[in-house]
Image (cartoon, rainbow, N blue to C red; front, side, top):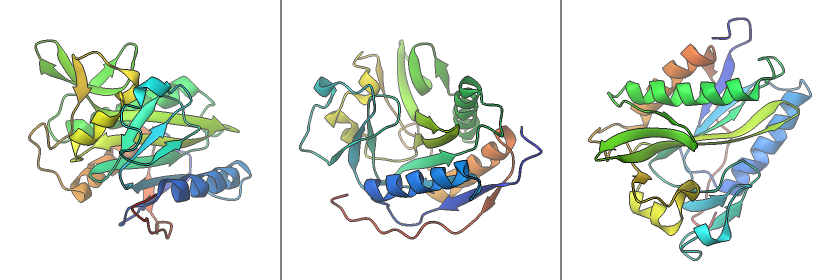
Length: 231
């Protein structure tokens, strides 16, 4: 855990945020952090239903192109779904101050998600060759409960993680999530695993785990955005 850095700012948006608004805010904040004009920030939000295409996305993995808006994004990874009931955390940390170790950073993101799941009695973990955090479902089946897609610019991170609290899992059917088509691998959520957890309860667990992995974070007001269904 980092003990010598100022507390990371921690903002939670109460209303859904349009994807393009979120990316524009992140771009500006990352530039400000890199220039020493702003502090580190973790921004928690939900998006309206949409698909995003990462830098490795394959066109054939978009199975229902007209179902929800599709946004091309600069983060790593393939196609992902975002929507209500999924906690997105955009993580804007200055890795120049944290060792400039991209591999360690991703491992810490994974640890953060694993510890957050453990707070609700869910044993989750990573898998070789498959990005994100997974849970065993028996008979060789494994489901992803959280996705990771990050980018670094001038050693400041942006984009981040998406954890399935209680989204509509049928919405993932419009894509091949993260390019993984093996029928043994699916998508799950806390609700799907029988955990009745509010977003506020999950945010509390996420905050505690972040403090353990990355260092202290303090609450600040969220950016003032309002989403429309088309965004």
